[in-house]
Amino acid sequence: MVQAVAIRGTPVVARVAWNEPGAIMRALDAGVDGVIVPMVNSPEEARRAAEATRFPPDGNRSWGPLRPALAEPDYSPARANRQVVCLVMVETVQAFEQLDAILEQPGVDGIFVGPRDLSISLGGAPSGLDGSHELREIADRVARACAQRGLVAAAFCGVAQEARRWRDLGYSLLALQPDATLLAAGLAHELALARETTSTT
Ligand code: 3PY
Ligand code: MG
Image 1: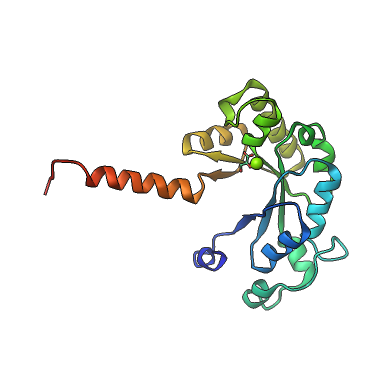
Image 2: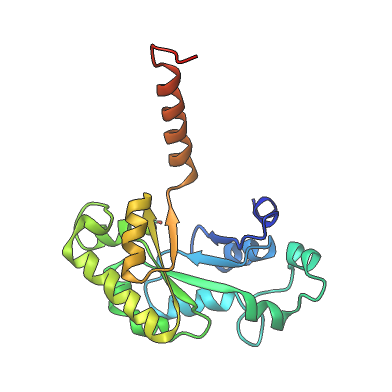
């Protein structure tokens, strides 16, 4: 997938399965420009994620950049450390309560909000921005805290209308619907057209 996206020169940010250094380093070695790390609930966990994205002395990433070294002949630890982006996910109340300390961790380049898990953590059902007043308040506070520090505010949005609402709050990296959802919607649309009883041709 990284190779396919690179054809157009579009940056690739991968969400890894968990805050686990091996998973983060594997994605970076495959050539992603940045990672989104789920369920980061404390400054210590944020530091662990950020350190896995940087070579020493800034972190503990180990050398093995298979694809990046092919694509960029002058790829070096210092250059990689400058270029990489590490977004940590705030998706629990516990994480939000420690937002400032999480943002202070060196190498944390921004926050990616997971509204579904955050809604559950608030005691409700998985939801988007409309789920609760508390969720909207958290989304707003995260955007402001990131803006104050010049860091990225990102979020999982789902449908495009919801993405516009996050953008209006100050979010600049907006995740739309997952591929499986888009594929199912596209197929349903095509099937409905194909099954129409009248033909215009
Ligand atoms: C969440 O909303 O919890 C997510 O992880 C979405 O990516
Ligand atoms: Mg989540």
